[in-house]
Length: 247
Image (cartoon, rainbow, N blue to C red; front, side, top):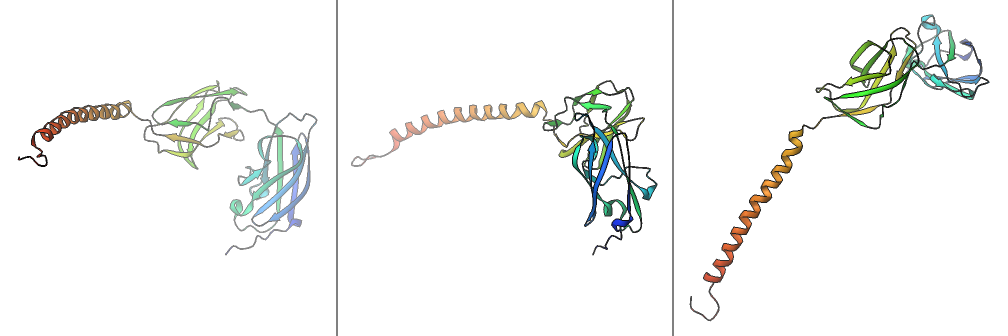
């Protein structure tokens, strides 16, 4: 049985740290979640922002992870924004006062993927080219994840817009793979691709053999069938007794 979260709205304080104007409409506690309703105002509606939510439980040292909604990178300005934070998953059965802080800045992506189509299937045992548009010159880390499990990674790679993703032949097939690309110099700059599928690479020999086998069977059956049919017809005409005639 879940224990109730011992937090009252009176114990929640919010500080907004941003070059833009952020106004919080209301904060509500819904089950295991704290929901923050806010507005993000900016004169340039085409701008994107990087927003993170921080908590006083760790002295605002790291962004809260169990968040969804209008949070993270590429948040566009506008009213009626919403952040959902699962406090129980993040802090467990927390009780006491808590200060939350929204920090934001104009978002200039350090990488922007260009050709990585997550709807496609990627074969293991092959190298797949990943292209992106660099946003700065900082080195990057490219890591392959299956769910939350890290499979492999290439660290401190040049941010030059291209990378050869080598998927090992012993990689398990599945549809829950994703790429994590992060800045080697700035822990706040992280992007994830959407989930994509890794499938087995079919060897050329296995592609050819079924065709050859089918051709061989057809050839053998054809030869046998013609010979057998001819013999059967000959035997019928010679050996089958007809009514009214002696054998």
